[in-house]
Length: 151
Image 1 (cartoon, rainbow, N blue to C red):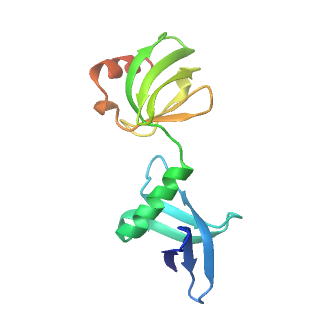
Image 2 (cartoon, rainbow, N blue to C red; image 1 turned 120 degrees about the horizontal axis):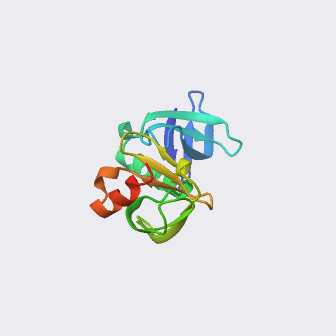
Image 3 (cartoon, one colour; image 1 turned 90 degrees about the vertical axis):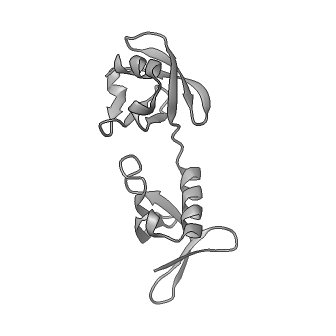
């Protein structure tokens, strides 16, 4: 399979028999635990046409197109700092700084904080949005203290 981008900026792939598949959509297999590994290119009906084992193995121009399309498809703000927590019992209102700006979220219960790895967390807010803490150890000390009360 050969992957390319058409004039409209859409992903395309040509298979061994020369059949060209247009307007393919990239979907990560493991968006939380291994975002750079396992990306599938599917059509509008969800049929997989291409499996990409490792994004890093792609040429830079194609990887940048895939990264841009994946960023459009996936909305997952990353928490950079926890400014305030209304209460250390749940439900609680958190005032946070994300990579997309300041916001507030409501944490319904401690079970809404899920460990993805030793230092990586996924926080499910009451409104259904999921916020990522990529590395707890990279948070400032005040943010870590606020967070540790819930872990």
